[in-house]
Length: 117
Length: 131
Image (cartoon, rainbow over all chains, first blue to last red; front, side):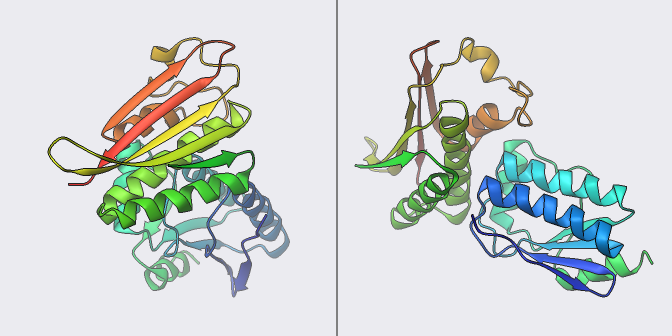
């Protein structure tokens, strides 16, 4: 199982998903992020999915869960870089990713998160 | 026709990659490729989790009017689905997901056929046509 690295930049945890996600990797990411949020007190999580070719119902649910967990640590999650084909497919699948904020790219996502502090 | 085992999470990733390549090689648009690969991911996970493992087959097919399509078969010998109509309803879930797996998958493909009997496994066949 491959792990997704989490980088702490200032008050923000930055996650860029560059692997073909399998379920175990997503569950692990969720656990690692919870640990990091608890350890660092970061106020934002930026998840970059520019390289992610598909988001199915399991991955989508996990992204929503990460958003909920972050909120319990007083942190906000912003999802950035979704491919147009992924957005169309997610909508048709019936997933709305409720509770997770989105931004067009990492730069706009950072602005969103930094506006909070 | 190629047969791929589905016995682990790695196998699910391999099925996705194989379907992606088959769809791209046969002229499906990027959106249609993404829909088909997402459908394959849902169905492969069902085969692994609910069917206790099985196999996927990928076939390139041609319609009467010359369109090319990708046909996917997912088979397992797991416990089967007692109520297929219910399983295809939005929101129906075994408790591990959002209940969008099967019903959502059906919306992503052009043809969808599910056969299942309690105790005799499940088979799902889907087709996505190039436009």
